[in-house]
Image (tube, rainbow, N blue to C red):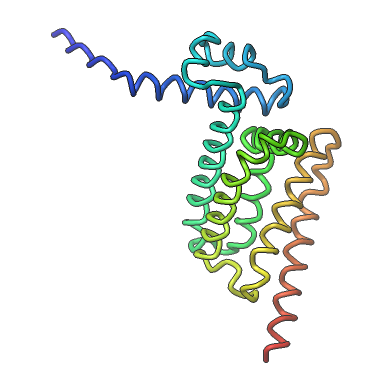
Length: 209
């Protein structure tokens, strides 16, 4: 019995597939060789597409970078949301959440976003175009965290600062670990962070009682 021929993809489906290949290739290229070396040629080679195919979807490399940043934020938000959904079943939810946050900062996806951030520091057009995307992402990720109740032991006004303190800690750690490997410190650092948070929560509780 012969298989029925697959229906031909629509132009919209073909375009979406091409854009997905370009975005994935851009994340991989920026994460592995850096923002400046992730040229159009480098990206298209990784995507298995011609430069012409890329420019039929995006007017400039910057347009592709901005689309990539948006997709990277969305992927990270989806991963964070999925991880947070299962925290209630964990014996030590804070430890699980911190380990997830730390691990995420070492992913190629986040390395790519970090490279884009660094480029945006001196590229005003890039900075202006991704600022609103980043703002939307961080608002949603903090809202997701608040819905878990993970930080309910802390006053509402310090929950967001606590999240960013942990995020920046592990982000900086991921950068340094690319050059200076100290896996023997990783568990000690995590234990110290959890102890500090526990002491802080207890101190706040004693103030209120």
